[in-house]
Length: 81
View 1 (cartoon, rainbow, N blue to C red):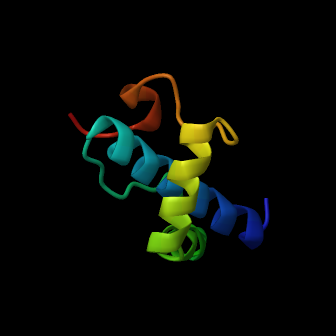
View 2 (cartoon, helix red, strand yellow):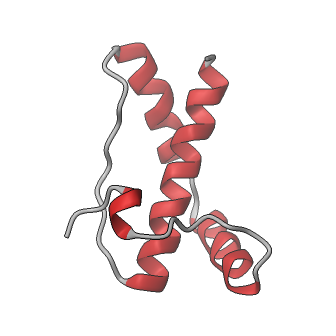
């Protein structure tokens, strides 16, 4: 797996968390599965690259059925309860 894939994973994880929060009001916090510093930094760069516009677009796509970013449960997302 390359750095671009880890970047995209972080970005997707943030979008999923933000959409789930917007629709279900379930709080979340940043978590990363990578232990190596370089890999964790690549993932975090993806997480931090998400803008408010990205979040708004993702929410609209999920609401209209154009995207399936939501997991079935909050537990699958890994959010805190």
